[in-house]
Amino acid sequence: MAGTKALLMLENFIDGKFSPCSSYIDSYDPSTGEVYCRVPNSGKDEIEAAVKAAREAFPGWSSRSPQERSRVLNQVADLLEQSLEEFAQAESKDQGKTLALARTMDIPRSVQNFRFFASSILHHTSECTQMDHLGCMHYTVRTPVGVAGLISPWNLPLYLLTWKIAPAMAAGNTVVAKPSELTSVTAWMLCTLLDKAGVPPGVVNIVFGTGPRVGEALVSHPEVPLISFTGSQPTAERITQLSAPHCKKLSLELGGKNPAIIFEDANLDECIPATVRSSFANQGEICLCTSRIFVQKSIYTEFLKRFVEATRKWKVGIPSDPLASMGALISKAHLEKVRSYVKRALAEGAQIWCGEGVDKLNLPARNQAGYFMLPTVITDIKDESCCMTEEIFGPVTCVVPFDSEEEVIERANNVKYGLAATVWSSNVGRVHRVAKKLQSGLVWTNCWLIRELNLPFGGMKSSGIGREGAKDSYDFFTEIKTITVKH
Image 1 (cartoon, rainbow, N blue to C red):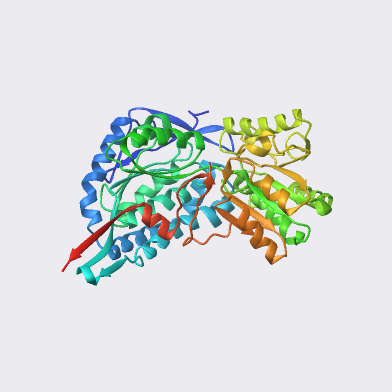
Image 2: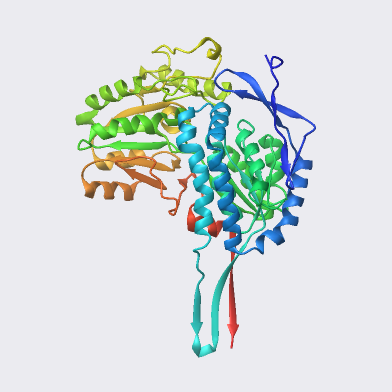
């Protein structure tokens, strides 16, 4: 299998140069289940070299003006945009997502991340107050923190990596980044653009490998004062433990168990296609995906019938199929985990309306061993079920009825997560009322996943600590200092 054709061999990018590693791990093509790439299995030595390079590059990069850093970030964006198709093809193959999604969302948003922070860095202002009676003036300055440790996940690989790299660089920090070992290819490809864009050696270092080896070495390094992490809650707990002795700045963007609340006055013609998308986009592997759908009783039967019909029309296919709505899940282990939730729901007496175990998956012969799963709709399930309380992170959603506004708010809030929610209603007063009471960092009403990058992004409760966005990212990647001058 692996010997039939040459495997893609990735290398770490440290101090502006690619360097091989002494050991490697296999990376699989999710659509075939075959090894197609080998990723460095880095550890402490590689992190030590990367941190050293980043520390040495910091004085020069941080002393550049915001305008100079902005110009470099825009150049990265231009080069990435020129290579959009090449990056989209690589992202789709590496992650399993459809090529159409990589072309229209992942890579364009990665370009936008660089452009957005290249612009926003030019518009931050500082505070100044006077105390004339004491002959003093106070003002604040913000300075870059130093070496930023950035850890990004496998579901939106380049999209979420650049969402961290761009603001870190813009604010004047240098970077040591660890992408997921499951999806490292586009991060490796990005390295080839950095030198062309004028990024000095050592400003961005990318070290590949697993969390327990390279992730822990990065997080526990005493000369990395800041960690930005997107991923699971158990990993975030470990990061918090390792960071505590060093009092590091932490930004943790974690999971969600996101509700959609559909009131009887919702416009179902808009709501149903949007809710199918919010449940199953990117195979349900987005932290913002809807996995609990609360529908008011008077429209429950109609909603369920139409929702299942619409879900069945979502085609699961090979990522390159232009008609496919969903591709493959990230790994065999993850596919088995997602399927296990459906089995547990059945054991609890739930009903599966479509998808796993109900409908047949049709795939080409060479993709039979790929990690594909049909979008699955579950009903007759209790709020206490693991399918209603735990993040499944796959194409599975539960539909349950509710009676009143007060009841559904309480039920929607009755999980440990608080990342995103959607509310569907034509009553403006209700929309505002419910949005305010939901324990959620983001609430979309009558839409889903429309993002304004200026505004804060992040969750409550176990969905994380901190926010990302224009001002929030700038605040996180800088230290504030108050200076008092007596005249």
